[in-house]
Image (tube, rainbow, N blue to C red; front, side, top):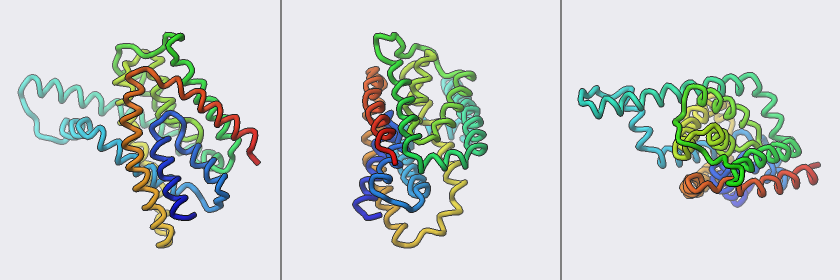
Length: 269
Protein backbone atom coordinates (compact mmCIF):
# COMPACT_ATOMS: atom_id res chain seq x y z
CA UNK A 1 0.00 0.00 0.00
CA UNK A 2 1.30 3.46 -0.90
CA UNK A 3 0.62 6.75 0.89
CA UNK A 4 -1.66 7.83 -1.93
CA UNK A 5 -3.65 4.62 -1.61
CA UNK A 6 -3.84 5.02 2.18
CA UNK A 7 -5.10 8.60 1.73
CA UNK A 8 -7.71 7.49 -0.79
CA UNK A 9 -8.86 4.58 1.36
CA UNK A 10 -9.08 6.84 4.41
CA UNK A 11 -11.06 9.46 2.51
CA UNK A 12 -13.32 6.72 1.16
CA UNK A 13 -13.90 5.45 4.70
CA UNK A 14 -14.71 8.92 5.98
CA UNK A 15 -17.14 9.55 3.13
CA UNK A 16 -18.89 6.18 3.06
CA UNK A 17 -19.01 5.63 6.83
CA UNK A 18 -21.70 8.28 7.09
CA UNK A 19 -23.30 8.27 3.68
CA UNK A 20 -25.58 5.21 3.51
CA UNK A 21 -23.42 3.17 1.13
CA UNK A 22 -21.26 0.96 3.41
CA UNK A 23 -17.71 2.03 4.21
CA UNK A 24 -16.37 -1.48 4.79
CA UNK A 25 -17.90 -2.69 1.53
CA UNK A 26 -16.19 0.08 -0.42
CA UNK A 27 -12.87 -0.59 1.29
CA UNK A 28 -13.08 -4.26 0.29
CA UNK A 29 -13.89 -3.41 -3.33
CA UNK A 30 -11.21 -0.72 -3.62
CA UNK A 31 -8.55 -2.94 -2.07
CA UNK A 32 -9.57 -5.67 -4.51
CA UNK A 33 -9.25 -3.15 -7.35
CA UNK A 34 -5.81 -2.05 -6.13
CA UNK A 35 -4.71 -5.66 -5.86
CA UNK A 36 -3.77 -5.33 -2.19
CA UNK A 37 -3.24 -8.69 -0.54
CA UNK A 38 -2.30 -7.82 3.06
CA UNK A 39 -5.04 -8.19 5.70
CA UNK A 40 -7.49 -5.29 5.49
CA UNK A 41 -8.99 -5.59 8.95
CA UNK A 42 -6.34 -3.63 10.89
CA UNK A 43 -6.38 -0.68 8.50
CA UNK A 44 -10.17 -0.84 8.43
CA UNK A 45 -10.25 -0.79 12.23
CA UNK A 46 -8.10 2.31 12.58
CA UNK A 47 -9.88 4.37 9.97
CA UNK A 48 -13.14 3.43 11.72
CA UNK A 49 -11.62 4.88 14.91
CA UNK A 50 -10.89 8.08 13.00
CA UNK A 51 -14.51 8.41 11.93
CA UNK A 52 -15.52 7.64 15.52
CA UNK A 53 -13.64 10.80 16.47
CA UNK A 54 -15.81 12.67 13.97
CA UNK A 55 -18.94 11.30 15.69
CA UNK A 56 -17.64 12.38 19.10
CA UNK A 57 -16.97 15.86 17.75
CA UNK A 58 -20.42 16.16 16.18
CA UNK A 59 -22.34 14.77 19.17
CA UNK A 60 -20.01 16.09 21.87
CA UNK A 61 -22.87 17.75 23.77
CA UNK A 62 -24.88 14.51 23.88
CA UNK A 63 -21.82 12.55 24.98
CA UNK A 64 -21.10 15.12 27.69
CA UNK A 65 -24.72 15.03 28.89
CA UNK A 66 -24.68 11.22 29.03
CA UNK A 67 -21.42 11.21 30.97
CA UNK A 68 -22.49 13.81 33.53
CA UNK A 69 -25.89 12.16 33.98
CA UNK A 70 -24.21 8.96 35.18
CA UNK A 71 -20.99 10.19 36.76
CA UNK A 72 -21.43 13.91 37.43
CA UNK A 73 -22.62 15.52 40.69
CA UNK A 74 -26.34 15.41 41.31
CA UNK A 75 -28.25 18.71 41.06
CA UNK A 76 -31.64 19.04 42.72
CA UNK A 77 -33.35 21.55 40.43
CA UNK A 78 -36.35 20.23 38.55
CA UNK A 79 -35.10 20.97 35.05
CA UNK A 80 -31.72 19.34 35.68
CA UNK A 81 -33.33 16.26 37.21
CA UNK A 82 -35.56 15.86 34.16
CA UNK A 83 -32.59 16.19 31.82
CA UNK A 84 -30.59 13.76 33.93
CA UNK A 85 -33.41 11.19 33.88
CA UNK A 86 -33.78 11.51 30.11
CA UNK A 87 -30.04 11.12 29.58
CA UNK A 88 -29.89 8.07 31.84
CA UNK A 89 -32.73 6.47 29.91
CA UNK A 90 -30.89 7.10 26.65
CA UNK A 91 -27.74 5.62 28.14
CA UNK A 92 -29.54 2.44 29.18
CA UNK A 93 -31.07 2.11 25.70
CA UNK A 94 -27.64 2.47 24.12
CA UNK A 95 -26.28 -0.29 26.37
CA UNK A 96 -29.29 -2.48 25.57
CA UNK A 97 -28.82 -1.92 21.83
CA UNK A 98 -25.18 -2.96 21.92
CA UNK A 99 -25.87 -6.31 23.63
CA UNK A 100 -27.22 -8.01 20.47
CA UNK A 101 -24.52 -6.25 18.45
CA UNK A 102 -21.81 -7.77 20.64
CA UNK A 103 -23.42 -11.23 20.62
CA UNK A 104 -23.71 -11.28 16.82
CA UNK A 105 -20.17 -9.97 16.38
CA UNK A 106 -18.61 -12.51 18.73
CA UNK A 107 -20.57 -15.52 17.49
CA UNK A 108 -20.00 -14.85 13.79
CA UNK A 109 -16.63 -13.08 13.83
CA UNK A 110 -14.87 -15.64 11.62
CA UNK A 111 -17.72 -15.61 9.12
CA UNK A 112 -17.70 -11.82 8.84
CA UNK A 113 -13.91 -11.82 8.36
CA UNK A 114 -14.26 -14.17 5.39
CA UNK A 115 -16.64 -11.70 3.74
CA UNK A 116 -13.79 -9.15 3.57
CA UNK A 117 -12.14 -11.25 0.86
CA UNK A 118 -15.33 -12.01 -1.09
CA UNK A 119 -16.35 -9.11 -3.37
CA UNK A 120 -19.51 -10.76 -4.71
CA UNK A 121 -20.91 -11.01 -1.18
CA UNK A 122 -20.24 -7.29 -0.79
CA UNK A 123 -22.22 -6.76 -3.98
CA UNK A 124 -25.19 -8.73 -2.69
CA UNK A 125 -25.10 -6.83 0.61
CA UNK A 126 -25.10 -3.49 -1.25
CA UNK A 127 -28.24 -4.58 -3.10
CA UNK A 128 -29.89 -5.20 0.28
CA UNK A 129 -28.79 -1.77 1.54
CA UNK A 130 -30.28 -0.20 -1.59
CA UNK A 131 -33.57 -1.99 -1.03
CA UNK A 132 -33.81 -0.66 2.53
CA UNK A 133 -33.13 2.89 1.37
CA UNK A 134 -35.70 2.57 -1.43
CA UNK A 135 -38.40 1.95 1.18
CA UNK A 136 -37.81 5.50 2.45
CA UNK A 137 -38.87 7.24 -0.76
CA UNK A 138 -41.64 9.84 -0.31
CA UNK A 139 -44.14 7.91 -2.45
CA UNK A 140 -43.93 5.03 0.02
CA UNK A 141 -45.01 7.33 2.85
CA UNK A 142 -42.30 5.96 5.16
CA UNK A 143 -40.23 8.97 6.15
CA UNK A 144 -40.24 8.54 9.91
CA UNK A 145 -42.69 9.67 12.58
CA UNK A 146 -42.70 11.48 15.88
CA UNK A 147 -41.85 8.73 18.39
CA UNK A 148 -38.62 8.44 20.35
CA UNK A 149 -36.44 5.32 20.49
CA UNK A 150 -37.90 2.76 22.91
CA UNK A 151 -36.80 -0.60 24.29
CA UNK A 152 -38.06 -2.61 21.31
CA UNK A 153 -36.46 -0.15 18.90
CA UNK A 154 -33.11 -0.37 20.73
CA UNK A 155 -33.02 -4.17 20.59
CA UNK A 156 -33.99 -4.23 16.91
CA UNK A 157 -31.46 -1.56 15.96
CA UNK A 158 -28.76 -3.39 17.92
CA UNK A 159 -29.46 -6.53 15.89
CA UNK A 160 -29.30 -4.55 12.65
CA UNK A 161 -26.02 -2.97 13.73
CA UNK A 162 -24.62 -6.43 14.42
CA UNK A 163 -25.61 -7.68 10.97
CA UNK A 164 -24.11 -4.53 9.43
CA UNK A 165 -20.65 -5.89 10.26
CA UNK A 166 -21.14 -7.56 6.88
CA UNK A 167 -19.25 -5.42 4.34
CA UNK A 168 -21.82 -3.94 1.99
CA UNK A 169 -24.52 -3.48 4.63
CA UNK A 170 -24.37 0.19 5.56
CA UNK A 171 -24.43 0.54 9.35
CA UNK A 172 -25.72 4.09 9.31
CA UNK A 173 -28.05 3.52 6.37
CA UNK A 174 -29.62 0.33 7.70
CA UNK A 175 -30.08 1.46 11.31
CA UNK A 176 -31.47 4.87 10.36
CA UNK A 177 -33.74 3.34 7.73
CA UNK A 178 -35.16 0.73 10.13
CA UNK A 179 -35.71 3.38 12.81
CA UNK A 180 -37.57 5.61 10.36
CA UNK A 181 -39.65 2.69 9.11
CA UNK A 182 -40.60 1.99 12.75
CA UNK A 183 -41.90 5.54 13.17
CA UNK A 184 -38.96 7.09 15.02
CA UNK A 185 -38.44 10.79 14.32
CA UNK A 186 -35.66 11.74 11.92
CA UNK A 187 -33.58 13.56 14.52
CA UNK A 188 -33.86 10.73 17.06
CA UNK A 189 -33.08 8.09 14.41
CA UNK A 190 -29.86 9.80 13.34
CA UNK A 191 -28.72 10.63 16.86
CA UNK A 192 -29.37 7.15 18.25
CA UNK A 193 -27.70 5.48 15.26
CA UNK A 194 -24.42 7.34 15.72
CA UNK A 195 -24.37 7.29 19.52
CA UNK A 196 -25.04 3.54 19.34
CA UNK A 197 -21.97 3.14 17.13
CA UNK A 198 -19.58 4.56 19.75
CA UNK A 199 -19.43 1.52 22.10
CA UNK A 200 -19.61 -0.88 19.13
CA UNK A 201 -16.51 0.62 17.48
CA UNK A 202 -14.66 0.86 20.78
CA UNK A 203 -15.47 -2.79 21.50
CA UNK A 204 -14.17 -3.86 18.09
CA UNK A 205 -11.00 -1.85 18.71
CA UNK A 206 -10.45 -3.60 22.03
CA UNK A 207 -10.86 -7.04 20.46
CA UNK A 208 -8.39 -6.24 17.69
CA UNK A 209 -5.89 -4.29 19.82
CA UNK A 210 -3.61 -7.32 20.12
CA UNK A 211 -2.76 -7.06 16.45
CA UNK A 212 -1.48 -3.50 16.70
CA UNK A 213 1.96 -4.55 17.98
CA UNK A 214 2.55 -6.50 14.77
CA UNK A 215 2.48 -3.33 12.64
CA UNK A 216 5.82 -2.21 11.23
CA UNK A 217 6.78 1.48 11.35
CA UNK A 218 6.06 1.90 7.65
CA UNK A 219 2.64 0.30 8.08
CA UNK A 220 1.93 2.53 11.08
CA UNK A 221 2.69 5.63 9.02
CA UNK A 222 0.28 4.45 6.36
CA UNK A 223 -2.40 3.84 8.99
CA UNK A 224 -1.93 7.34 10.44
CA UNK A 225 -2.20 8.82 6.94
CA UNK A 226 -5.45 6.97 6.40
CA UNK A 227 -6.80 8.05 9.80
CA UNK A 228 -6.18 11.76 9.18
CA UNK A 229 -7.86 11.53 5.80
CA UNK A 230 -10.82 9.63 7.28
CA UNK A 231 -11.26 12.11 10.14
CA UNK A 232 -11.38 15.23 7.95
CA UNK A 233 -13.59 13.78 5.24
CA UNK A 234 -15.74 11.95 7.79
CA UNK A 235 -16.65 15.07 9.76
CA UNK A 236 -17.77 16.84 6.58
CA UNK A 237 -19.73 13.79 5.42
CA UNK A 238 -21.45 13.42 8.80
CA UNK A 239 -22.76 16.97 8.72
CA UNK A 240 -24.06 16.35 5.20
CA UNK A 241 -25.67 13.03 6.19
CA UNK A 242 -27.58 14.60 9.07
CA UNK A 243 -28.94 17.22 6.71
CA UNK A 244 -30.02 14.49 4.27
CA UNK A 245 -31.85 12.63 7.04
CA UNK A 246 -33.73 15.74 8.10
CA UNK A 247 -34.68 16.45 4.47
CA UNK A 248 -35.82 12.86 3.85
CA UNK A 249 -33.37 12.32 1.00
CA UNK A 250 -31.63 9.07 2.00
CA UNK A 251 -33.65 7.00 -0.48
CA UNK A 252 -31.78 8.56 -3.42
CA UNK A 253 -28.66 6.56 -2.49
CA UNK A 254 -30.48 3.33 -3.36
CA UNK A 255 -29.54 3.79 -7.03
CA UNK A 256 -25.86 4.14 -6.16
CA UNK A 257 -25.89 1.04 -3.94
CA UNK A 258 -27.56 -0.99 -6.66
CA UNK A 259 -25.11 0.20 -9.33
CA UNK A 260 -22.01 -0.58 -7.23
CA UNK A 261 -23.51 -3.85 -5.97
CA UNK A 262 -24.31 -5.14 -9.44
CA UNK A 263 -20.86 -4.10 -10.69
CA UNK A 264 -19.19 -5.97 -7.82
CA UNK A 265 -21.17 -9.13 -8.60
CA UNK A 266 -20.54 -8.98 -12.37
CA UNK A 267 -16.82 -8.20 -12.18
CA UNK A 268 -15.82 -10.17 -9.06
CA UNK A 269 -13.16 -12.76 -9.75
